[in-house]
Amino acid sequence: MNRDSFESRAGKKKEELKRRIEAGDSEDEEDLGKRILVIDDLVRAERKANKLQKPTVFVSFAGDYGEELHKTVVYPAVRDLKTETGTRFMAENGMRSHGRPDVIEHIAALMEPCCIFLGILTREFEIKVDHPKERWAPGGWVLLEAGMALGMDLPVVFLLEEGIHRNFWFDFLGSVRHAPFDRANPTPGLNLAKQLILGHYKKLKTLKH
Amino acid sequence: MLIQVKLQPIANASIVVPWATGIQELDAEADPWLYRIPDPKNYIFSEFVVTPFNISVWQDLWSVQLINVEQKGILARLARFMRERKINIVSVNSSTIDQGAYHASRLVLDCTQYNSGVDRDHKYRSGEPAATLGQLQRELTLEFLEEVRLFNSNHPSIAVVRNLSMWRLYQEVGGAEIRAEGIRLRIENGKVTLPNEELRRLKRQLARIRSIEPPGDPWALTSLDDYSDAIRIFPFFQNMAIVPLAVTVDNRPGAIAAVAQVLSTNHINVLASKGWTSADQQWTHVWMLMRDDSQEILPVADEQVEERIEALLLASENLHDFDIRVYRVALESPEEIAR
Image 1: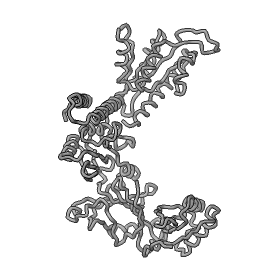
Image 2: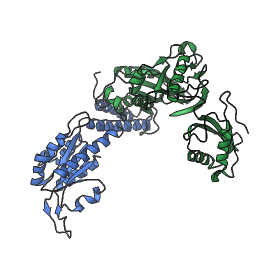
Image 3: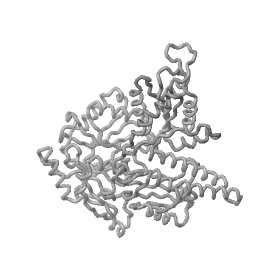
Image 4: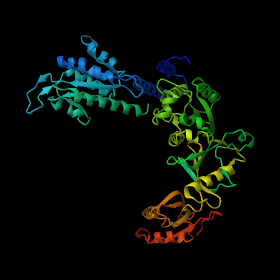
């Protein structure tokens, strides 16, 4: 069966219905409008389903240590993950967007095909707070990209270096389990992050798509 | 879902086949299959299933439910749509509705040859209880976008649903154990009859478990699963501590709950039940097929069982001010319950 992609056919149908509404014939415009919304729902669902076929994790990091951790440890660990059929997970990040005038749009475009977000929160800036242990702020980009991921309905996992103040993550994602790690030995935290990613993936698979 | 529970003889007796057309010439060409279902604990036969679907498709059987505007060509387009995807339509039920404005269809599909990137293949779906045909449903919705009935944009009247009953049955009995046991039956006047050889085999197998051949002919609890087009037949004999009783009680809140509690407390398992309210709304009648797991209340061949059950119920605190009667449903001739 050789046919245009689903999105292409859906797009053509949508344009056709729009033209008919604009033509102002005797057709029921409200009904046509509802059917256009149905098309939008179908396309969203199709995109979501396709994401799970070749699952990609968007990995966000900041700072020199964050970059090093991503390159040497996190990226290989994500690539090592596999689905139940043996398909390897892919990893994406927004670092190529830096310096572009349309940086946010570019990051969004890279994030859109991903199904899970992994943010590496590392100690970037020491802050003045009255707390015995949590005295650090992470890089801003990770928080921004986490916000974008939440807006796209991606499940979020934080790989959270010990010492990051909770103001930077707990208030909006404290109810979700995260993976704390110690810079001296990040492996246990990374292993937990992998489990959380796989758990989110399995949950996404069981949701209707 | 199992509904339309009935208690009926199955020796030299016929069972109504709900999916029969009622036209003998057509029904003679139909495919009702009889399968013996072994008990997964010991693989000795324990019940029958009659279904229009051969076991070869049970693992990948789905139904499409569609309501569309009444217009020509929909069925042809549906058939073409399925053919393009190598999906075999094994059953169709459709009718015009709403004064001819709409048409409701239910198609049962054999998807064993259907593959897609998102819906995967038969091998995957056979082993995965949570498998869906989401992509097929989206494609179907797009294909019939303008014809499908739309109550609101969130709910186009189209659904693709798995026949989980048959899938589960296949998984539970291991497929191979029942594969060779399928027997073609013949529909006569909308009914099928179980072959006598099958009932003799049943008796022999039960004799192996109990070391004594069951007396008389079997009765059976038949349950129609209209969702999956299957009739489940649970046979039993009169020496199996399984008794059909009817309970009549005032039609007041809490009555049935209290009856059920008493039975449960006394280790009486209700295998099946059917209840209704009398025409004058005064009484609730419940027919129950009971099995005594302790063998103390309903010992074999006991003729005072209804009196014993009635005494148990009346002794209950929660039922002391209810009017209760317990009747034995004679297997020789089913009795109408009357007060």
